[in-house]
Image 1: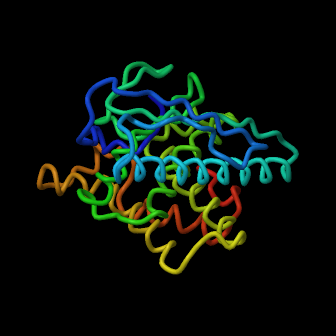
Image 2: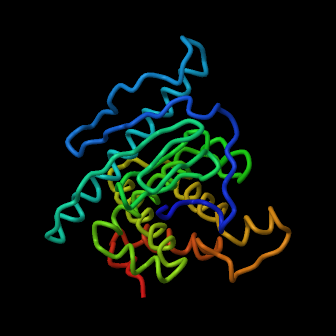
Amino acid sequence: MGGGLARGGIPIGVGGGGLGVLVLLVAILLVSGNLPGTGTDGGSGGAAPQANDDAKQRVGFIVNDVQQTWSTLFAHAGRRYEPTKLVLFSGSTVSGCGAASASTGPFYCPRDRKVYLDLGFFQELQTRFGAPGDFAQAYVIAHEFGHHVQTLLGVEARTREQGIAMELQADCYAGVWGNHAEQENLLEAGDVEEGLNAAAAVGDDRIQKQTQGRVTPETWTHGSSEQRTAAFRRGFDSGDPQACQSG
């Protein structure tokens, strides 16, 4: 599969939901400012369905803004951005890169050029990794769409060969989007810190220390907490995709 937030070879376990409960294909078109109606995960009324609907709307807004931002940036560079789709799923799904489950974590599949996300991951991000907040979730989404940008630019294969460079560049691209979101007055006080905290929370060193009690840099796939926050900050401070060029 394409790059994602999976933890240095250790799947991110996301609890809740039976297998194959629901697969939602959310078509986020560049010209649309609204998330198409997609229904709910089941049930009628109550706080849980409402919370789930709110989460879907928030995700839809973020995805739409991320893609509008990249469309503008591509246009400035004389290129055309090709909008892609986000697949929301619960429990398990099948992508162009094969079967995936909640434990896979959010990911991008370069074969079908789609982003895949189980909304339950956001609860995991908050409770297990200590990275709460809407902008922490936005960082995750923007990171995955950063991999789509790599594919469109034709650098995905090259950066993949460079190991963690692919993930750090996607972190930087997430920061680029964050910069433009700030220019659009979409950010609130503390949002940038939430993004930096999320980037640090999914660093390979921190995750390895939590899960195996020791750090093994030779097995890193995404970069350390320091590397990931630095990459995000580089993109955010510059707002320029050129600042994210891999060596």
